[in-house]
Length: 181
Image (cartoon, rainbow, N blue to C red; front, side, top):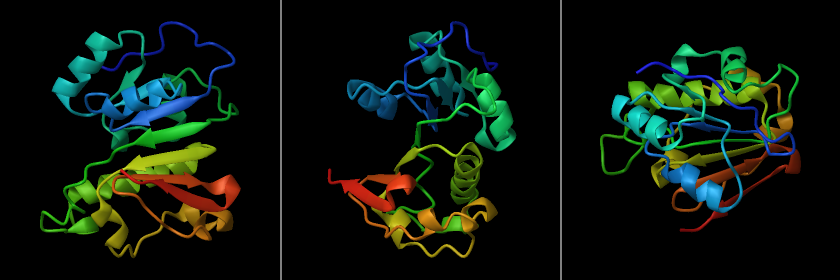
């Protein structure tokens, strides 16, 4: 299945929201119930991509996040380089961080996809970020901080707290809050 681009211009007053690791769109549907609708989905799994294309035929869809730069993501979503992104959300693979598994973290290819996600977030510079993952993610040690994040003291100064699955990062508020599930 190939990627497909924006087919209809979005409402100009709508939030600019991008979804990554979209899977079967469960997180997207939850966000939509709160009035937050993605302008782009990013998913590598072929079956999930078919589901997204069937259920959301007008939603731009791209594949493997590691194969796209921030500029390519913006273009696929129909965004200009200067257009602000309000929300980026996604649920990167959890197997590398799960306490039910080997917890190889960044020594696992699936863990490195998480780092790629952080790099894209840093390049896209959204106002808000929502990351869904297992609790084990926060207890892993991370020797690597993406270079783009090193220059953002307001983000690095945030204390990390978490709920069972969802972590909300609000860099412009200098705080991190959580939803307990």
